[in-house]
Length: 108
Length: 127
Image 1 (cartoon, rainbow over the protein chains, first blue to last red):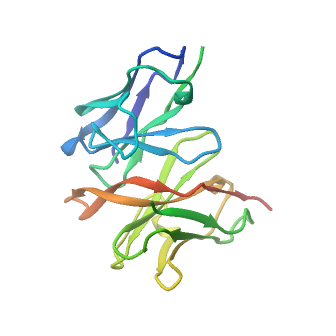
Image 2 (tube, rainbow over the protein chains, first blue to last red; image 1 turned 90 degrees about the vertical axis):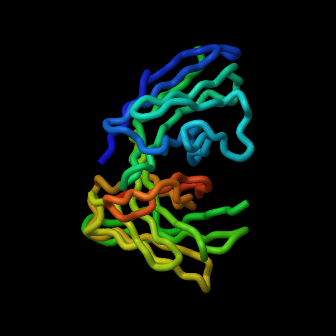
Image 3 (cartoon, helix red, strand yellow; image 1 turned 60 degrees about the horizontal axis):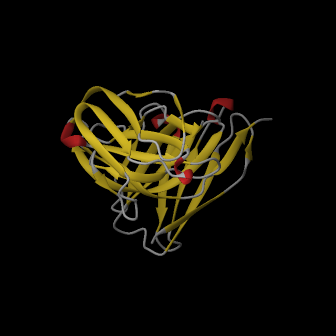
């Protein structure tokens, strides 16, 4: 099973700031088979990024993903009020698919 | 846009079987991968398994001995059965439509990411 770690655990930021979230895998993730999700309290996760860098339908371009191998990054170029949430990464290169523990982005 | 809605008991007794259904609207259950994912309180996300419309199933090894996912094309639904539950199975259960993103040749399964999710349903295991 591929284990994912995310850092930091929590980020306290202000609207307008740039956000960089990290996701590391315990083994290389083939073909950049990595996705990012956003989850708000009481809601299901929402797919943001797949294939490490492809935005899902309807996702604003302030969200971008990058990385390969074992190190991946989600960047929010300019934090909007609705972006305060928990962000999970997920690998789908090996079965079973696994999720990281999440990074919480909260209001400073 | 596909919409998914979970249904089933919110309380299950220890050692009994958890049974949930997911109704799909705005699309057919034929031709896609249908998954269950759970999230224990204040914990992360755990994939339970999927069923492909052709009949192929893939379950998380950690739950494989207790899980069955089935499809009912006449009702446009799929369902989850998890037997012999304990308090550790208390979680929000999500149904989701998966997209086969990569073929894991060592396991001989497609592995998915998840575009469409249900709103989730809390299942508590308690006597």
